[in-house]
Length: 144
Picture 1 (cartoon, rainbow, N blue to C red):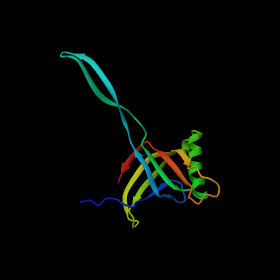
Picture 2: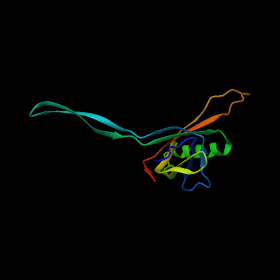
Picture 3: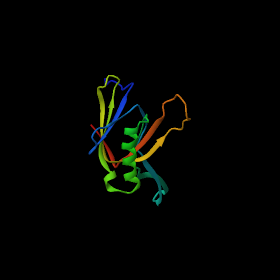
Picture 4: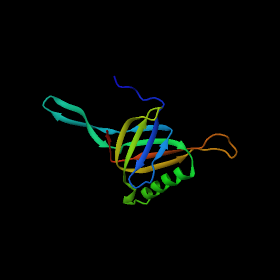
């Protein structure tokens, strides 16, 4: 039986980066193929079926505490995507580690880009840690 991942930590590293970035929370991992309804008139009458539709780019949303270095790295990557710069699409490795730091799952993200960057709202003088969320899209995800 395969062990389940608990108390995980997450890591993204891209080609050309000096170091990768660690994240404390996986906020989402989505891959979607839409369905399309198809109907036609056959020998037995009107037939309704569903077919594969458009596939959306896979998305991974990750959260980490806001820091100057991580923010600069993610914001620079995001700005390349905003400018439609082909250099924004990078081969990336997404790693999920267990609580002891052992690698549990490794995914290759083909042509990954930082599609969205959010910073949680906060108030001046608040004691809470400010978090940022990066949504990374890619052409495809390969496991292993």
